[in-house]
Image (cartoon, rainbow, N blue to C red; front, side, top):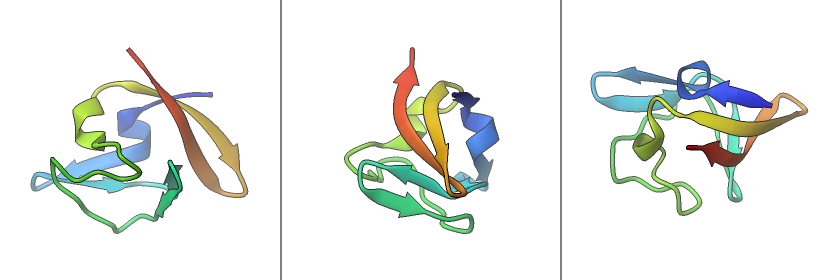
Length: 70
């Protein structure tokens, strides 16, 4: 399933936070976790993909990020 960055994350005061529970490369994040640029989750700096679309799978209330569309 294709989801835009803005559907999954919010940006406030320069910090990115998931809107929903996200799983990427073995790491799970819930809403309320905030991070800035340069922070990697499972080897991925999500701030590099602001404005992009993600390939996700939805399982048991968690969005699993499988890839990023260019």
